[in-house]
Amino acid sequence: MNSAWDQQQRFVKQTIENRLESRPAWPRQIFRLELEQADIYQDRSNKILNQLEEDGELGNTSLRLGNNDITFLTRPEEPRPEPDDEIKEATEKLNLFFKESSDFSELTAYASLCKIYDEIGENITGMEVLPSNNYPYHLSGFTGQLDGLMRMRDEYIPIEVYNGSDYLSVEKDGNHSKKYKQIRDRHQDEQPVSSPILINRRSDSNLKTQVRNNFNSLAIDTDVIVGCETSHPQIQDTIELFNLGEIIRILPPLETADGQTFDGEEFIQAAKNQQKAETIRPPSVMAKAAEDLPDQYLSRIRGGVQLHYVNSFYRRASGSTGRQASFLLQQIYNRLLRKGGMARRVAIEKGWEDFEDSYRYIKKARQKKEMILEQARTYIKILQDENVISEQNGNIYARNSSHPQPTFSF
Image (cartoon, rainbow, N blue to C red):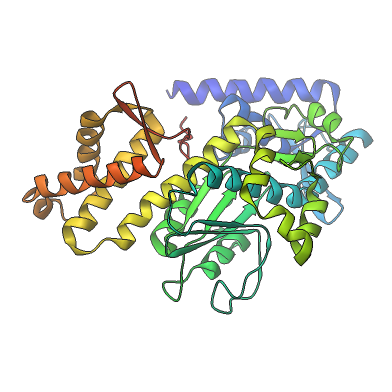
């Protein structure tokens, strides 16, 4: 017997029974989002709910709310109960919030990038951060609204932001999903090199793997949905009704160093106006706006930006030794992000173990191990000079960051 499965199944069953004691129906997708706070992720919760329905212990009904067909969980009785008016209104209100809060999520992402620039921008050649807008001059005539834009050395990094509740994936309803296609379309191999970053609540492993392997891109999972209290003054009651306080964070308007305050709509208006845009472009001014963001949110984005930069060493490396050392560097930095600080010697040894497990041509690499290790040490020194790696009490760290792609294990 799978004890973890049994425990989680019992927990899910008891939790939904608790919800249905006081309500005739409960929104299925919102319930699955709630379960993540108990470390029951959506691929697992979906299987458990399907099993409970197959076993006749749970029912469901579907209603059209707004422009969406919403599935509600019910007791397995006929006819299926319908949700009460309060639950219907709250469900519709929350789904609308996910759509309407996208502007604010672009602001929080931009403030985070400005904060990161304020920390390392002087050390990274040609680093630049720009807000939501259209940037054809930067991207060789590329047209289309970006949620933000970065540059580090010779690479441009289009920023895509998604603030919805569902897992992003490569495919949806048998076709490539919208965000996957946006990442694909933002990628360019040359003139100039363009390697996008996706900032979202959570994406599945297939999307993470494909955007990295196919487009030199990176998906950052913040695990947080953000909204502004002035734009959605009543949404906190809905969040509490659905027990989502750990996932959805409602924040005050963000305040900059020069005293400006922005909600999402005000930020987008400023970004589109050439004169106003100049007031939000200095990262030193916008960095202060990141102070009110959840620590986890900023730490994941910082980790993603710094990992993206570390990954770019491979794309710039010349010769097989340089490429092998830069791939080893990726293993070391991923370990630092996941495990925390460790002695330089230990980090390199553990990184080499990961390198041996994952590098395709490891037999050839072993023949020049010392050359590869020496080049990797040089890269680590460069990253320390650039404040991407820090050192304290004899240990090296991925500076002030956590891994942008947490492992969601059962």
